[in-house]
Amino acid sequence: MRWRTVFFRLFHEARLLQFALIMAGAAVFGTVYVAATGENFAVGAERATATVVSMQFKSGRGADSYLLDVRYVTEAGESVTTSGKIVASKLPAGAGPGSHLPILYLPRRPDAVDLLPGSREAEQMFVFYLALLALVPAFVLFHGLLRKTASYFRARQGGSVRRGSVIAVKTWEHWRGLDSRDGFYNSRPRRKGVEFARMHWIDETGRKGSSLRRVRGAMPALAAGQEIYLLQDPASRRVWWVRDLGLKAETA
Image 1: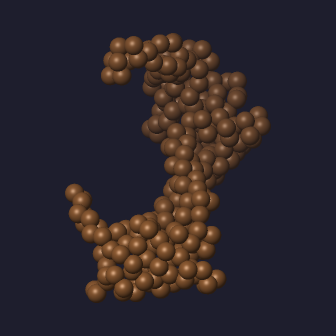
Image 2 (image 1 turned 180 degrees about the vertical axis):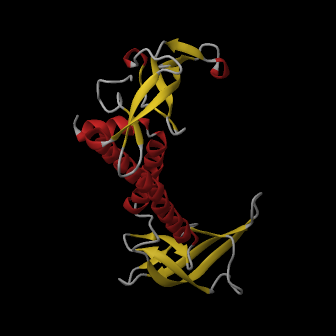
């Protein structure tokens, strides 16, 4: 059996890894999107001193805020006046029309400005660190899947034989779709899906485990208490059912 085939078979069962990869992908996509749209104040922003042209106070349900219009000069010597581009919840003492405030601006979009220290910069850095944080569990789980795949081949090629017995074979059905004609909360199966089965076992030392998921029709007829063969990986000590390893002898 090829390594790639085994890897993807185990990956289909790694639901937690699939979820972690989706979350990591979404976080990374959000970070890349922010950088690509030019609204990235965390990277590439320039500093300048702006003069407050006007200031408007707004009272909201969540918190009060200030809407500022400012004028500043870029490093290229261009004079820029913004209109309603800065929203701040707090301002330095003495801030008002005619006062000077430090700002951040984007060279590619001089009308995109933020106060220094910037609230949007902090938000964007938060998204960036969130993406890094989301990658950690995905990396750990992916590494665990690689180790499990390696254990599969070690057990198949040189595992020690152990005896065990069947606890039970559990089956379930995966529905392919829902019929929402009765409303969202009263949905009912629309199409019959695929039935899956998983065998749960206990070995001679009292250690419990389970087989890989397989289509119900591919699961041999096994009764509770029936004796089976298991193979233990000599390195990780992981125990596998011989049928999961692609071997023929499934019962003692």
